[in-house]
Image (cartoon, rainbow, N blue to C red):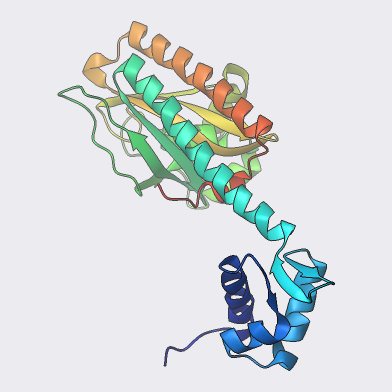
Amino acid sequence: MKKTEHRPTERVLDILELLSSHPEGLTLTEISDKIKSPISTIYPIVHTMSERKFLYADKNTSRYSIGISSYSVGISYANNTNVFKFIKMQMQYIVNQAKEICQLGVLDKNEVFYIAKVESDEPIRLVSSIGKKFPAYCTAMGKSLLCNKNLDELKELYPEGLKAYTKNTVTNFDELYKQTAKIKIDGFASEFGELNDYQHCVAVPLFNNEKIVAALSVSIPAFRASSEKIELTKKLLLEVRSEIEKYLTENHVNTDMLLYGDY
């Protein structure tokens, strides 16, 4: 028999799964029989779930069915799935115009964590992997994710200092803070050769209710990083940032859940 960690929690989930397949509702006795749990055990659970509107109790039939709160949770998941598709669509628009890879990332402690990408069709292009992590202070995307941090917070994130990966890597906290503070003014971050010597990156933070929830970046091989290409990339990122943030606001997206979907 498989060992479980918390039986009371399992009963809550068993009840929800059971009632989701019985839209006509079930009585307390029927629920008890089907999940093989005593009425005395599940009654307080069902009562609490009804009080919180995760279950609906029909007083005329004594049957329980899925409540409005459970429906709201389901809608929230569906909205987050939709918003991720919307973001990927916007990323594809950038790639179509800039002809370079576009990536989506979040801040994981003091590292940038790449959670999605859209590749370009260029025969020579930068290779990246979803799930990779890099120090946030030496990437454009990472700096975008750090732009709301003050100087003390930056120092707390890197108690051992800022390691140099190339001759261009920022290793001074005052300079890093100067760069991140400028992002809030310009709206974008730009970095060349700080993590490696062969790419130029431009990135923008994505805000929801004044909180940075993710960042978008475009990486350009050094030999293609003309001033015209960089300016086009900035323009596209700022345009798409506006569209995504508008979508998050208008659809009341729970961005805390957004990043745990199927990427």
